[in-house]
Image 1 (cartoon, rainbow, N blue to C red):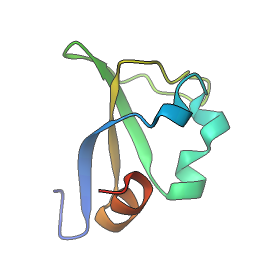
Image 2 (image 1 turned 135 degrees about the vertical axis):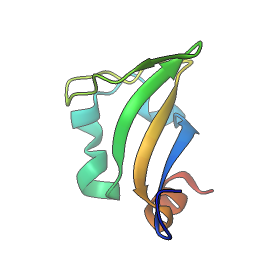
Image 3 (image 1 turned 90 degrees about the vertical axis):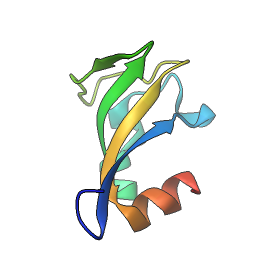
Amino acid sequence: ELDDTHAIFEIEIPEKWIGKTVGQLDIRNIHNINIMALKHNGIMDLNIRSDTRIPQNHTMLVLGSLKDIQKCFHI
């Protein structure tokens, strides 16, 4: 947790997001969540841009309000 209402979570990538770009998903505008990094085998890729394609077998670090993250990822 960053404060009482915001946190960074490491989340499994939803199946329907795999293969799409961050821009296509429009996560920031739709869910009010920022993807900070993609992680695979302990290595983080922090260079996330709108044309970054979401790969299989990765997790992602997301930043947002607890409410928005829980709603988006059903946690």
